[in-house]
Length: 639
Image (cartoon, rainbow, N blue to C red; front, side, top):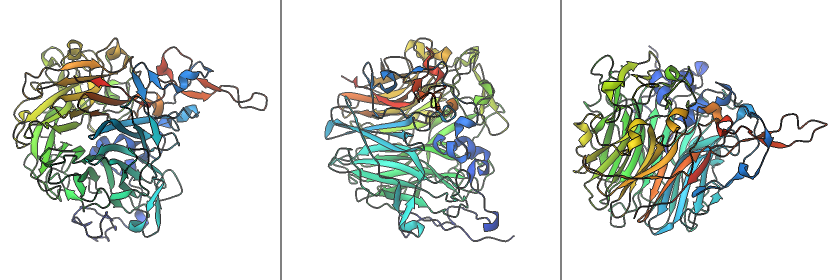
């Protein structure tokens, strides 16, 4: 067999720990090179690639793939189309809507995948980031508040291009970006992580499919402005469009502990989907406030916890199918990275659980321990099976009853944190469709997978007792062992302990500790009103002073002032992949993507030689006919 030359792979530093060969990349002949695209991903990768990239890898706008959103009975636009507040819920992104074509609803309008962080030195300084579509394509949006999230102003991320040294030219221009997160260090610098990429010739004449993670720092302006240009965490040169692998789903953490041996070190973790079908987790760190980054370090090392049920190559070990990593730091400077692993070890033909793993670094991100098991979980159901064939290949959160409004892609992921008052206590939250409230004996049980791509099947999804909950797995020995490793998710404690939550779905959680050890978790919640039957959602914040053990008592606060209808932008299939929370000594700031604002369209019959253009909004009483996605936040008192 002829072995073709490897593609050139570039990272942030000239000398790397991982060469192209080590990454397990296999090149194709130039004459046969095709865009890596959605079709080139393995079935496992297709299911787990982030929503941001899945909307561009297909080579089409999602609004043209399934169904077009229509404005319904149009009426003249009102001030409600640019509302900045719903009760105590405050809009973070400060733009008014662009007027879009109905078949491209979402382009030029949406904000989703939300994150927030508060300055540890000044609780009134809050930054928030999100995927921002106001320019038409996705970019890394960021806003800042100087008064405790009461009012907001937008900043501009200078990410149109970056220095092109890794690409053999002065500049590398970027077509799109997203998958953002933000954090602060101990000295009042704010940081923004931004994924940038080019689409390739599936959507434009430019074959470039390069990608990178860029790190931006705000020094002295509290998030109002950011350094130009962003500093590369890791890059992949694919200007020729060979499509050898994908960088995906990065998140950011900063060690803001003033007494840590790694004070102010910046960490980013991510997934690399390689051409051989594998998906490993990597991390890179900066010891100079985000100016330069280390070579990538493998996080998802080999472990007997990961049977190679997929039959994929194992260049770095059996844990070769991973996604959804999150780095977080303890008060002693220990770095933890938690992530989903899909090397299933099914106990029977119907069992379809996955597992959450965690790797720990005690040397500032230079190396990691072997993975430990945090716990097992059950993914949300296959969407096409239960929602009238919609959004095939993805999981979603089906509502109960015969309707099929809730078709946006959704998956369960882990979020961890370390108790600052008990540095050996590590808490990890994650969603599980089977849990202590699923009542498996009376109508909810696993039923294996769809043929391909493998989506989870269950009895009782639309009519039974199935419901997704946020479960807790805790460690009292600095991550060496977790309660979830020896406890079935059906018996783990849950964050969602309110009465109605035992019968309804909760998903997309953010979690963090306050300085005094209060643990706060925010999440989308269908316990209110008719949410579970209509596919609507709200936001709840649950807090406890003792998250360890099965006796944790949570206080629940409804964060939203009214229920949020299912999204209609991007044909209702893309609402982001996650939501975050910022926590200070006294206040929790949940941040989410909200669909209560109506969408704007060109009024039918206007914009002609005889009828001047006018702007209309969706006219139905139910905003789910055509709604916007905006980032909202609120203040929840913890004491």
